[in-house]
Image (spheres, rainbow, N blue to C red):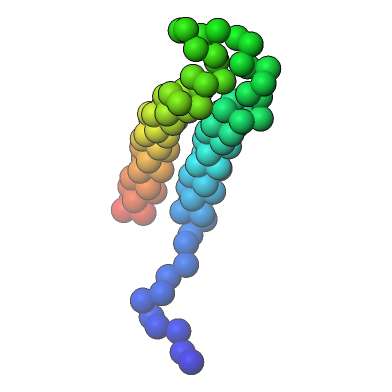
Length: 101
C-alpha cells in the first residue's frame, strides 16, 4: 500500500513542542494523583489526626481538596501552555521573517 500524500510528519520544533506539552501534562497528572490518592487514601490514617475546619484533613482532601488542586492545576496548565504557545509562535514568526529575506 502506498502512503497518501496528505500524511506529514512533525518537524523538529513541533516534536519539541509536543514533548514539552506531554511532560507538563504528565507532571500535573502526577501531582493530582498524589494529592487525590495519597491524601485521601494512602495517608488517610496519619492525616485523620489533623483537624481542619472541623473535619479531619484526610476527609477534607478526599472530598474537597483534590477538587481544588485539580482546578489549580488547570489554571497552571492554561498559563504554561499560553507561554509555550507564544514561545513557539514567536519562533515560527522569526523563522518566516528569515525565510522572506
